[in-house]
Image 1 (cartoon, helix red, strand yellow):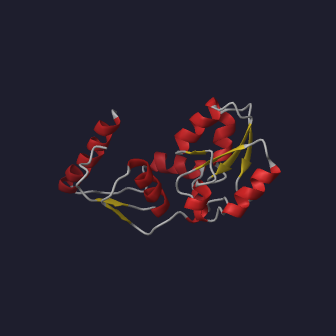
Image 2 (spheres, helix red, strand yellow):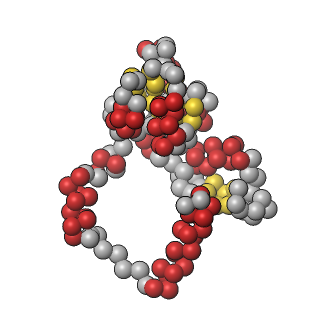
Image 3 (cartoon, one colour):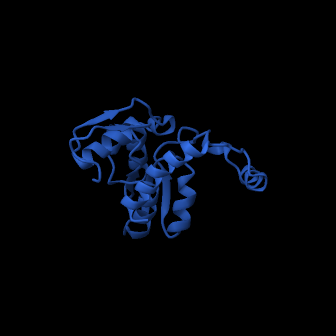
Length: 172
C-alpha cells in the first residue's frame, strides 16, 4: 500500500467496501464512513441461498459493497473489472451475480458461453440512480458540454495532484 501504515485513512463513501478493503490489507488506522450503496444492501443472504438452491452448479460472485454476510457466501469477491475477468476465466458455466442487475449484460458480453443469474430478484437488484443515465443524456452532455462546471485555477491545480498520484500508484 502506498500510504504509510502509521497514517490514518478516511474511507468513503461505502462502509462495506471499506471493511472488505481493511480485511484484505490488514490496515489498522481506518476511519470508516457509515455510508452504503442501497442496491447492494438490499441483496440479502436468504436471497443468495435461494439463488444457490435454484442453481446448484453455479458459483457466486459479489461486489465488495455487499453486506459482510453476503460476501462470506461468495466464491469470489471482485470489482466490476474483476467480475468480468472472473467470468472469462472460471471453468464454471453458471454464475450467480451479487451486484446491480445491469452487470449481467456486461458479463454476457464478456463471456457469452456462460449462464448468469442475479443473486437478488428484480427490482431488488436494480439501481434506480444508474438507470437515470441514458445514451440520450450522454449524447446531450457530449454535444452541449453540459452540465458545465467552472473550477477556479488554484483549486483545479490542487485537485489534479491526487488524481496524478492515483495514476502513478496504479502504474498509469
